[in-house]
Length: 249
Image 1: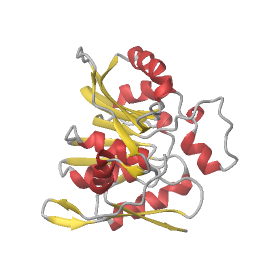
Image 2 (image 1 turned 45 degrees about the vertical axis):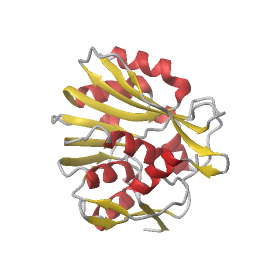
Image 3 (image 1 turned 90 degrees about the vertical axis):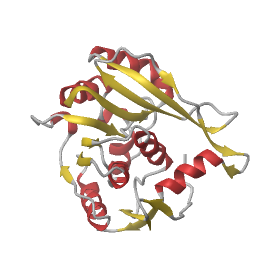
Image 4 (image 1 turned 180 degrees about the vertical axis):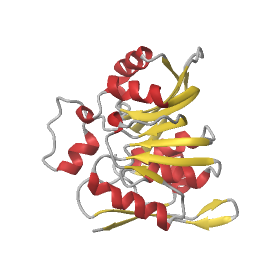
């Protein structure tokens, strides 16, 4: 789904401000998937050590840290052209940020995290892939296979902690099976539909290790009503309050 250009003021702890986000002039740019994911993560009031996997320009983790003062934010991004943008965005928004510049699957850390969050590449293998290297890295699931992805997440999570991410709804069965292999369970899910008459285009998932809870399916978000942005989607965009600045760093 495209990112709708709604930039308004956000009341946050007594201050009105916009989060400025520098992005590459061409290639992959964040879209509304990242904003819906951020809003979903924020609903669980994250705190403690948070790791943003596949940070891109840093949008999801930085928004979460902006709105949750008890978050200690770290991130990992393997694609070198994204790194200066993520670092710049942390700096201009005055958010403390540790960025690991490597493949998440090869990340060797002894520390554990309270939350791992991610907007991972999830376009299926059969989809014709872009010739643009940045788009290939950001979009296609072959760059981060589910089994390997979840195994590494499980290794880095503290007991009874939180894994929150978005994915293609068509892969929901595969997601559930892959999570069960590492003894994780979906406890919350929310589907995003471009229109009421359209199938879901995104699923937001909250999984936990060591949980026996049944899954709660939250009311869906319908992004558009006719030709207008829905009330629910507009609230997410206004809360995110981002300003995209395309440039070359």
